[in-house]
Length: 91
Image (tube, rainbow, N blue to C red):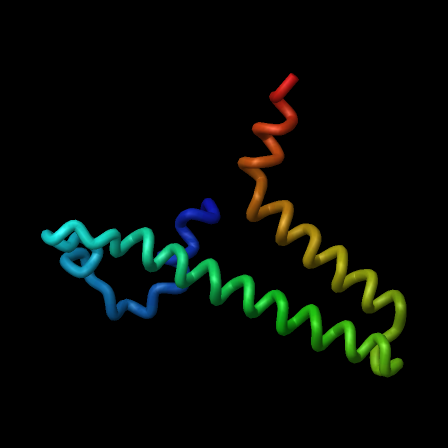
């Protein structure tokens, strides 16, 4: 699923097709995408800060911290794969 479709993954089923396609030109899909993106970014930020504090306090080991950072990096790269492909093909 592309990062532009994240709003579908996080849809709580309160929006049906008629609320996606407003007749007055309201960009519902764009608004939902932006909202989902903010929620996901906030979740990553909270998780990162929690783990960072645990590492600083000695609650988790350096190995666990490195694993978490690798996991976060993998997620970020996965979400931005289209950008990486464009940069790779750019000469």
